[in-house]
Length: 464
DNA sequence: AAAGCCGCCAACCGCACACGC
DNA sequence: AGCGTGTGCGGTTGGCGGCTT
Image (cartoon, rainbow, N blue to C red; front, side):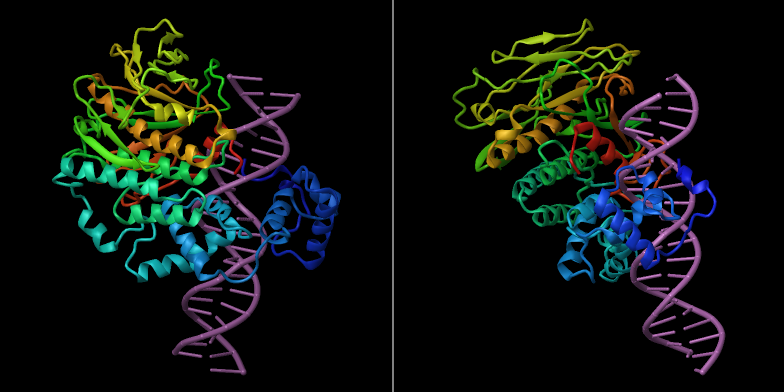
């Protein structure tokens, strides 16, 4: 509903606020708090609607607001954050204490966009304008296969470089990645408030989906591809933070051609080798000096979904001996391959190998459930390990899926609440758009939607 | 000095979503 | 399930003030 019901009433003031009105509102909220905004104007003696009062408070009267012009550091941060977050002003504002989303939005529209254009940077994609011109209507890369390896490695290393404790650094890293032509584009907020890492993680996920396209990939998708985020509605999880990501399973999976590749990177100074295979379709992580592959004590929750609607979900859970218990009667099998003492120590396990058999009428998708078991008490370095192993596994989930030959869709019914982002392959480069939303321009490759974040944040119980 | 133009920014508008009934 | 209400968000508008002609 667009307009608050009280706005239909007569005699409500609009336009600029007078000092007297400000005083009334400030005094009321200071004394009683705002509570229900719709009742604020009446209680405060204002001829305004609650919505207007709320806006005035948030954007002007709030005591913690920082006034004055933006510093150069703030401007730089906004630019960097915009490269990562797009027009998610509230998310950007959250990284700038004392600044409101409205303020930042105005600054962006009136000043920063112009500055970027003057520097030859497209304010939407944050890429060089000259580079974008070259890419219009073109193929992504003629030598995609060789490019993939370095891209993945670079991406992972960028993730590792980002300092979790410094939003600016994380933003810089993302910005750097964006400037190198990587797509990004999702932020996840979860219970641990580890937003920067989540942001990077999601950026990586999206990057994996959208960038690692073999040459000639454009146009191969004949079906809607979806990348869904959301919390699982499964009742058999005991986790406090249960986020999930569903990656598209398709024979034209953009990552399929990377099968057989090995990606090397380091995780907390531990060399990690990420290998994909074509024969078993079981992506997995391997660690040097793995001495304890059989005893994994951390509680795990693995879930695969056949995605056939009506909430029929193939769920599998694993205990320390990696036994699988299938919680549904549907056909399908899951197999775990998580062989690392490192993972054990992190109390957080990622990894997936799934083999869902389906019929044409019953298309599967991989439903990778990511579970955090002891987020409250983990030291920072261990948390890092969680997140760093996460993107690899997510990518692995996507990689392993390429073997499925059927045309695949996600069921809109099996996981709720959920966030849908549709990878639109009709453009020269992939981009993401929300369902039921007007499509953005064809060059807008870093489009982000706060609604998705909002839903996701809610779904994950975030605090933003 | 006056008119026109332009940029900034506060506020409004419309939409989506959560929630309660 | 459907509806009404409340909240939050991003896009857009319009008034004001400064600058230019």
